[in-house]
Image (tube, rainbow, N blue to C red; front, top):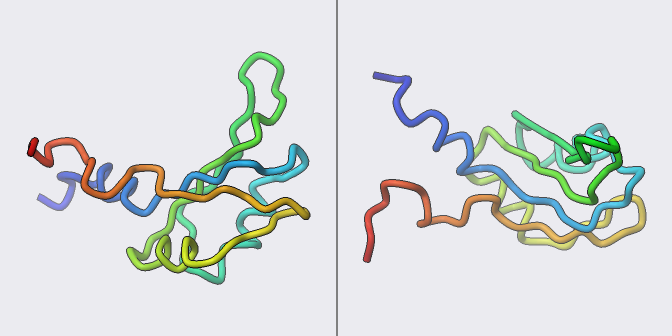
Length: 99
């Protein structure tokens, strides 16, 4: 069925964005990265108690090739160079089997 494994597919194109300025919003991230592909999800993590930004976020793309294009270059958001990597390292998905 088409429904199987959709969650794993979704996370395959998810990127961690670290070192972002506190003022950075989801809108900043969308504007920065929309040229790389279709953004399906974008979030800036905030502390649940204080509501203050925690300095990192995540962005997900529809296209498999988008994360590679993003990671191929350094990015500055609001004057700060951000640390980007795949949120789920390739080959470490659940059910991939041990080695």
